[in-house]
Amino acid sequence: MTAAAQSHAAGFPVRKGERRWTTAEITKVRTQLAAEAAELRDEIERAESDIADRLGDSVSDAGDDQADVGAKTYQREHELSLTYNARDLLVQTERALARIESGTYSVCESCGEPIGKARLQAFSRATLCVSCKQREERR
Ligand SMILES: [Zn+2]
Image (cartoon, rainbow, N blue to C red; front, side, top):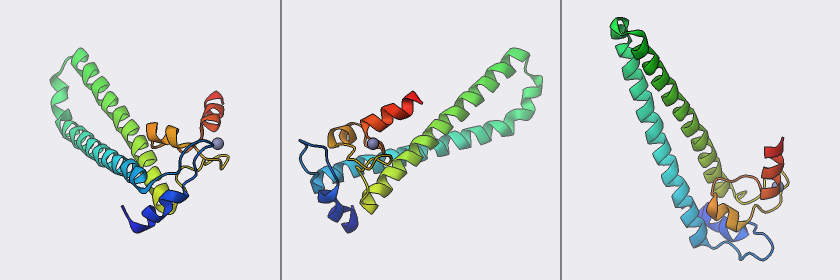
């Protein structure tokens, strides 16, 4: 953890009744986020090289019957959508890490109120407080 992130820890807002963030708690959240980001990057890389491999094979698809081609197309689309999800998660994870570095972590991006420590310890990627999140989902 960088010195900057460390010096922010005590300043991250909490909700009423919650204890201040300690450096150890922020370190734990940050370590977890960093590990998730690394895993997601791996996953995306693997999926991309698989897809690239398969695109190279597509010439041999000519001899396959319709059912095979359908199954392969389905599999390819399924993998692509997994990659999109992983990318999305990676963006969110990196954003949370950047927010720890910049000292804006745990502030709701919508209303500026504390997101809450309990919520962040359960969903470390959260950038909205519970009420803003619910409002967004209702839209
Ligand atoms: Zn909010």
